[in-house]
Image 1 (cartoon, one colour):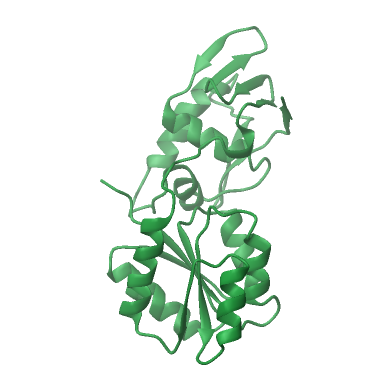
Image 2: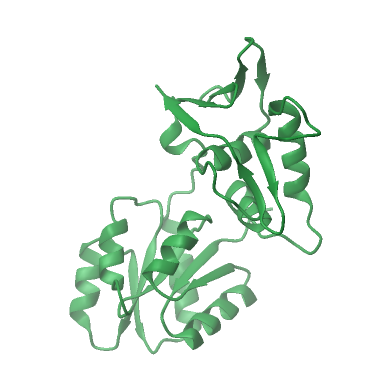
Amino acid sequence: MTKPPHILVVDDHQQIRDSVSRYLEKNGMRATSAKDAQDMDVKLANGHFDLMVLDVMMPGESGLSVCQRLASDKSLPIILLTALGEETDRIVGLEIGADDYIAKPFNPRELLARIKAVLRRAPQAETVAGALAGKLVRFAHLTLDVDRQILLGSDGDQTALTSADFKLLMVLVERPRVILSRDQLLDLAAGRAAGPMDRKIDNQISRLRRKIEPDILRPKIIKTIRNGGYCLSVDVEVEG
């Protein structure tokens, strides 16, 4: 089953954020909202998104500034929300990297149609390794060979990782000493939301611990954070 696209809705008006998010979820998508650029940066750091709906006029950093800042990373398509009649904003937005725009006030059906059209044009290739492709990642007593998806122990032992274990470990080594909730881990590693009583991440963490922890009963590399989630509690060094 194809996972539903995850949309980040960035707008300083709560009513717009909430109504757009509800409409997208009603039509088979996942939606997360942010009230401004600072909130957006937090959500981008701790989640995976397929497209962003971005308001141009926001307090603090504007949508055009955000669009320009993110232009170097074309992995996230952006649809701008512009004020009716602000043609200059639309033109500038497209010039600096936005994929489409829609003027306020807008029909939610039109926004949904534009989102689907942009997603159809967006590249669908999955990139798990990202910037760590071709690298060796050292943490604790282990070295992760990213391209081979193999863990190398200090004693020379090699442990092959399943695709699911590799994705989860990549999420952790890219964010050392950062506490990630179960929902964030499931989103980043599997691209889906947690359901009621969903224990998938807990089970995956247990399997991964059996491959990396010297003492599975007293884990020191991946720590459980009470009422928080999990954290890779060691430093990471990248070579290659």
